Amino acid sequence: MRLGMGLVGPGFIAAHHLDAVRRLGDVEVVGIAGSSFESAKKRARELNAGQAYASYRELLADPAVHVVHNTTPNHLHREVSLASLRAGKHVISDKPLAATMQEARELYEAARDANLAHVVTFNYRGYPLVQQARAMIAKGEIGKSVFVHGCYLQDWLTDERAYTWRLDPKLGGASSALGDIGSHWCDLAEHVTGARIVAVLADLHTVVPVREAPDASAKAFAGAAATAGKPRRITSEDLASVLLRFGNGARGCVTVGQVLPGHKNDLRLEVNGREGSVAWRQEQPNELWIGHHAKANTTLTRDPALLDPSARSYAHLPAGHPEAWADAFRNVISDAYAWVRQGAAPEAKPVALPTFADGYRNSLLVDAMLKSHAAGGVWQSIDDPFEPTRTTRKRG
Ligand SMILES: NC(=O)c1ccc[n+]([C@@H]2O[C@H](COP(=O)([O-])OP(=O)(O)OC[C@H]3O[C@@H](n4cnc5c(N)ncnc54)[C@H](O)[C@@H]3O)[C@@H](O)[C@H]2O)c1
Image (cartoon, rainbow, N blue to C red; front, side):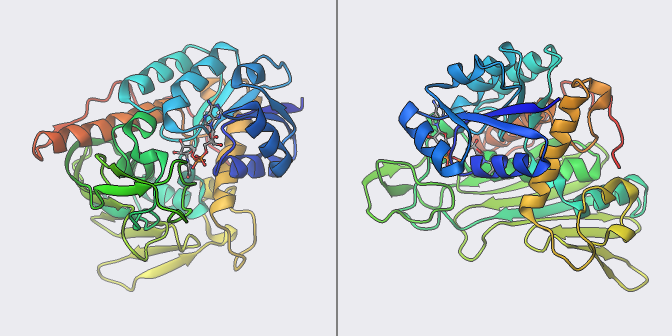
C-alpha cells in the first residue's frame, strides 16, 4: 500500500522531512499546512509538496494522509500531535516532543494507547557509526562504561541581532539551548551507552541577555537579521554545563551552547570504558575513534563491510563515499515508515527508532536540569516513569 504523508509547519526542518520521505520512494507527499492558507500555498509551491490545506485540521480530515509530520514550533507540538493521534494518524514529531514535561507526558500516554506509530526525530541516531558505537558498547568491547562526555556547540545565535522563537519561553519552552540541542545530545548519550541518566547538576547562563529582535522570528541558523528590531530581554539559557550520573554508575558531563563563535553543529560524544573508548563527532561523521590503553588507537572509517551487522543497514554507500546529516535523517524516517508498515506493533519497532516514550523521557531530563539550576546548582534526580523500550526488533 502506498502511504500518504502530510506535513504541518513548513519551515526550515520541514524541507528535510520531505526530502527524506521522497527518498524512500514509496510514500506520497499529499500536502502541507502552515500558519495560514497563504503561507501553505506558497510553501507547497516552493517545496513541490502537493496540496495546500487551509489549516492542520483540514489536513487531518483528509483520508489520503496516513502519517503526519509535525514540524511546527515547540509550543504547537502538543496540539498538533494530539489532534493527529485522535484523528487516527501515525505521527512523526520533531524534537523536543513538547514545550513542557507535562505536555510530553500527555503525548506519550496518548500515543501509547493509540496503536499508532509515534516517532520523535532524534535523528543523530541514524548515523551508521553511531549505531556501530552502540553495538560495540552493547557487546562489551570497551568494557564497563565509566565516563560519558561531550558537547553540542553552535554559533548561530552569537550576534545580538539574531533572534528565534526558541528564545521566547511561550513559543520554545522554558529552556532554549538545552531543549533545542542538549535534548539531542542526551538522547544520543543514552541511546549509545544503553544507560539512563539518573541525576543531573546544571549551571545555565544567558550570555546575550538582550537581543535586538526583528518582528519576525529568524529562520534557524539564518544568522543576524538584516535590520535590527526592538530590544528583547532573554531569560532562557544560551549556554549550559551539566554534570551527569548514569544508572550504571558511569559519570558524565556535557556542555551546550549556541553563542560560541566557530562552532557550527559541533556535537561530540565520547564514552570511556574500562577496556577502551569510543568517540564520535557529528562534523566528521564517517569516522569513529577507538581508544586503547595498551595498544595503538585506531580510527574506523565508515565501511559497510567493517560495520557490525546491526549498523550495516544504516550505511548506503561503499567506503570512501561520505555520508552525512541528510542520510542519517533519512535512516530514521525509513525506520519510522517501516514501523508504520508493520502496523506500529510495539514488537515491530526498529530498535534504533526514537519514540514518544524517548521524547517524554528526554523532557524529564531537560526539566531536571532547569530545576537543578533554579535550586542553585544541586543534584536533581530523574525518576524513570517506565521501563526502557521493552519490545524491540533488531534491524539489519
Ligand atoms: N531534528 C533536528 O535536527 C531539528 C532541526 C531544526 C529544527 N527542529 C525542530 O523542528 C521544529 C521546527 O523548527 P524549524 O527550525 O523548522 O522552525 P521554523 O520557524 O523554520 O518553521 C516552523 C514552521 O511552522 C509554521 N507554523 C507556525 N504556526 C503554525 C500553525 N499554527 N500551523 C501550521 N504551521 C505553523 C511556521 O510558519 C513555519 O513555517 C522545532 O520543534 C525544532 O525544534 C529539529
